[in-house]
Image 1 (cartoon, rainbow, N blue to C red):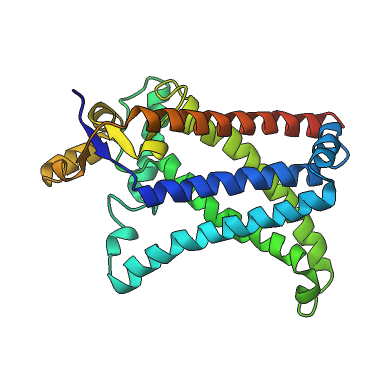
Image 2 (tube, rainbow, N blue to C red):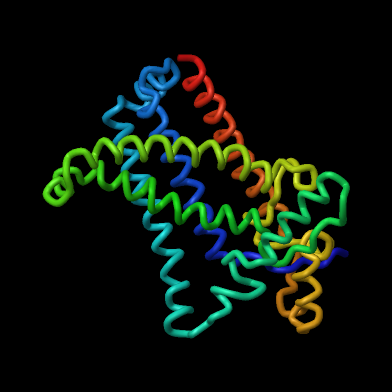
Length: 271
């Protein structure tokens, strides 16, 4: 019988679910506003009640994403300020990029071309750290410009009028970039690459098998063994209902994302 180990807590998985929901909702309601002359955008907006309704839901999902961001930062701030855990910012379990991540990237490229062995990854790979910090960039650039456009009456008291033209351009172009990245690069790295296809269930079950942990994150596995912490995170295999739930939710999200990506391409190149 294969041993399984916890990788993500229930709270982390629920927070990722909220992130998925809010991001997909923002793209579904935002891209028709961005490409409002495209046939599919007109049909979708009319189906959902019109562009005014789309705008309402877009702002609702923006609030959900902001809530998700706050719920993520709150425990991190507590652990940093109150519990004094410096390992959050630097260490083998940290999501902050370290020199090793850049070396892993170079070694991975060499491995792609058969010029060296595959790098030994720790708890988080360099591309996972990139995905993580991209959310902070998105909240600052896309979220910041979005709130400027939403609260334009209030903001206009302090900022010049030209800032709204800049915000509109930045908001649309950066959102387009974020959607394209998530629906291609992130989906491929997380679910569609050969060793994970058709779905990596770890973000839904929170569990990873010993084989996966040993082969894909050999550095973390070695460290857990050396520190005698492996047994402390051992758990039962994910139940069938949880795996099926993950497959349904994951496949739905990936399917919606890929459809939206195709529609975006149609809007961009079909003008």
